[in-house]
Length: 99
Image (tube, rainbow, N blue to C red; front, side):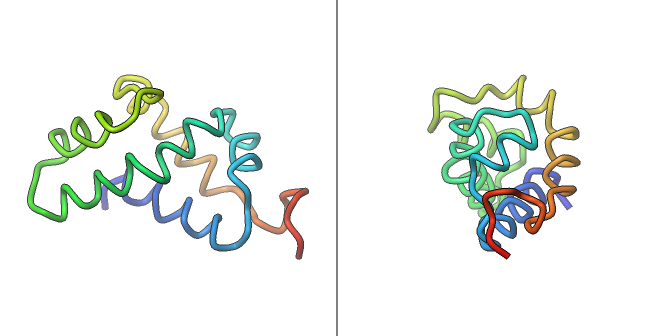
């Protein structure tokens, strides 16, 4: 499965569990504005585009045009590390999350 799609699904699980973007930001060392842009704009547009039959490179380029605080080079450069960090976040361990 595409790592960008998996990243979106993991972020969605964390958000649904009540984890705040600020807490995810602290765990991943990525600014919350960049994570918010990815979660709310870039990744949904990317997923819709590839679901519509576009190739992943075209879909990512179009999705990134919607925001001005995320670059393709930086996103792809940190994608593996970001995905690993997001996957290791436990909602119950985040200080701001009630449990």
